Amino acid sequence: MEHVAVNPWASLAYLIAGVCFILALRGLSSPATSQRGNRYGMIGMTIAVVTTLLTHVPMIAAQMQACITEAPGSTISSLPICGPTFLTTHIAWITVLEILAAIGIGAVIGLVTAKRIAMTDMPQLVAAFHSLVGLAAVLVAAAAFLNPVAFGIADAAGQILTVSRIEMGLGIAIGAITFSGSVIAFLKLNGNMGGKPIMLPGRHVINLAVLAAIIGLVAYFTQDQSAWVFWTITALSFAIGFLLIIPIGGADMPVVVSMLNSYSGWAAAAMGFTLHNSAMIITGALVGSSGAILSYIMCKAMNRSFISVIAGGFGAEAATGDGEAKEQRPWKRGSAEDAAFLLQQAEQVIIVPGYGMAVAQAQHALREMGDKLKEHGVRVKYAIHPVAGRMPGHMNVLLAEANVPYDDVFELEDINGEFAQTDVAFVIGANDVTNPAAKTDKTSPIYGMPVLDVEKAKTVLFIKRSMGGVGYAGVDNDVFYMDNTMMLLADAKKMVEEIVKSLD
Image (cartoon, rainbow, N blue to C red; front, top):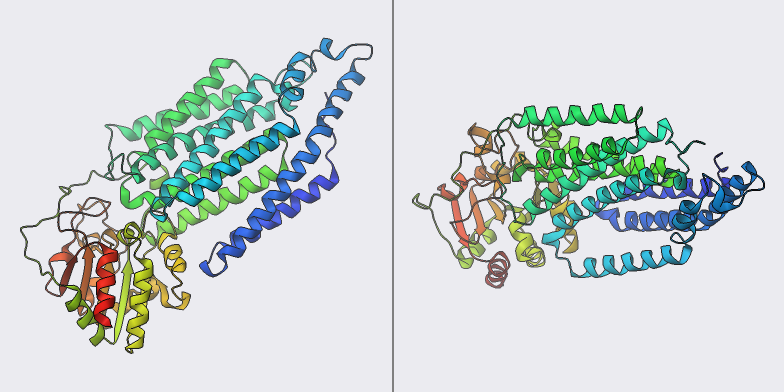
């Protein structure tokens, strides 16, 4: 069966959609332009979906007509290529109304989820979305394998084309890895699994063996399309996704989220080739490449090896911390009134937000505190660590939500040198990203990760719920026990609100 000629107008529409996706990524690179970027993304996806709907039914009709032409005098049901399978798959199931109904159901689920989800749960939501993209790729590949004629990837004998076998093998492998890896990431981010690395005996040998088996089977699949080959690739890919993510500790989870985002893009691109859909190829390639670049940038910012992270914590050692704060060490406790006095007397205050601020939803109260301090003539700046929170840009989004001026927000490399000349470092719910053990303790799971040098400030005000808790990486923080640190033990939002009242 010959391939149906591509509609040039559809190609143009997909090209426009691709341009919109590029503009969306550009807009999402900054909080100031993120809303515009989202709009471009929505426009691009609308163009892609509508174009697919308008071209899908005519393409089916053309394929059926091509079958009749190739076998004149035969009925549709008697044709080997366009027989009952073709009819039941395309005519009975894939209709415009059913597609619109599916889109409507998905839109309702997405709208309700977006309305209800808290910002603290956004990393888990992103991981869950990645898992769905990976699972979709697996299901599409399985459908194409079971009925290649319906997808236009079979030859006259009903055998899957060699190039399509390569696309299918890569798509299902990447999709399955994305799905199982994202499930583990979700469980870790959601607290169902601990944040410490889980080190399996001989994990590197196991991982390399499974990856080699997958690559070998994908190559063999190009010569033999037996069902056992396809399903073995699927099973091994699900397994390696699980094995790659469980050894990665909590401190590296933001990198994992962006890495899985990249995987989901490549899985979508591979399935785009199978479906002959240029919009999926463009979108998947954009998501895959941008996710890979972001992962690389974050690894570089954290002094991590990009290869070691994507290889499943290669070279990582089990955490040696006991997971509990060392309460027997002396520490100094302060009140909201004490904090307000110190903040008012300062010339410069650097605020360091962390995941605890997100949990308490304290960003609005924090912005109000910053405004009050500015009224007293205090210079206020915000320091954002590359992995503050549990996904890239988490803290930036929260501060933007509270209308914190973009000019007041600084990245680690731009502000770390100012702590030594700062009167007060105000740490709210951050732990691992301010832990000096990352610079000195080679046995620490966060060793080598650049951290904010808050301990160099004249005074450190550190808000956390209790002295018994530790950071996501499961290690204690020496800053708690330093002479220049005052611990403010309370819910972050309540403590900041009390400080604001004291400033009045």
